[in-house]
Image (cartoon, rainbow, N blue to C red):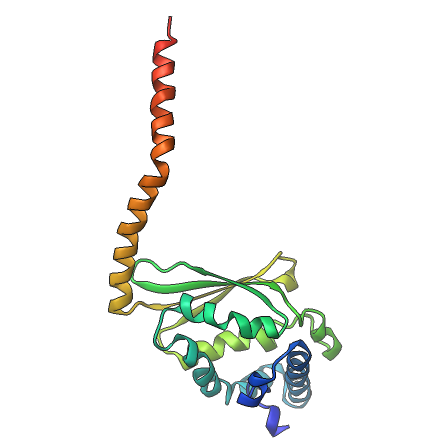
Length: 207
């Protein structure tokens, strides 16, 4: 059991040969580890036991993606790994107000029915909640939240992550805001002209 306690699965060799079959086997290992521990010491203690090694490994794995860039860029770069594992992932940059922030949207949950094989109502606690808990512990100052869950009937799984933006990111946000405003005005120009024409027509048509 020791080899699957903690994150319960992913090693460098696993990443190099990852596919949906390997991922499902990896998730089964984690569910099996949790179920065995929960039967022995209870669910809360099992969760804490499996969390012991998880933050350290999360730091190594996620750090490769997010340590020297924004969350949005890092999460976007991770999409191919999630795709290999059977997920359909989208990323939305919501950074503002001094926060480096991102929404992670998962359209497909390949473990949605898998949890029930191990007597769990949903996979969220063993997979998603543990993932976010490990991320918060691995990266101090980071906040994480689960906004919606397919296991509860929502159309997608939606996760939010945020942390204080670095100075370079803050400057980039200000620059992007100015550039976005300029492009917005350019895109709106035809509509602004049309509004003016419509107003003029309205005035001229008055009796």
